[in-house]
Length: 155
Image (tube, rainbow, N blue to C red):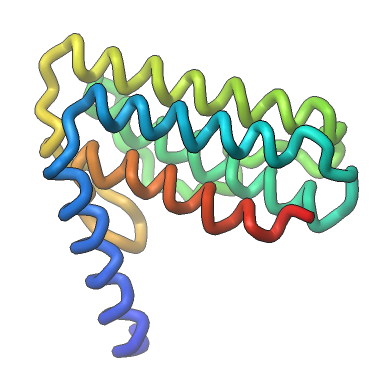
């Protein structure tokens, strides 16, 4: 692996962990809701074009893939898969895609509430393909950070 990339991934990992250890489950849920609502508002009137479709379907795919990883903490087996299978098809209409993001974020919040209610410590880890073992808090910060960064490409 490229030494710069390795260093960058370590930086990201530490950044996510630092933020995650400072937040309660309720604060993480509130952040998911706030940032999800902001993205929903941002895309509400954006045009249906190839770049917007590609970006939003990527955001959805990553979050769905991450949900699957977090479900390992509720008893599902760990799959050594990539996010591509969770990404909506290119044929998905833009209007449906916008709704899929809102639904996906609501499902993430429900999953987090389930983890919280089951007493799963937010420091419990699940493997990310590139970043290694991430705590629940780090996964949630990853979802938020990823969606915020990527949504900047939607115009």
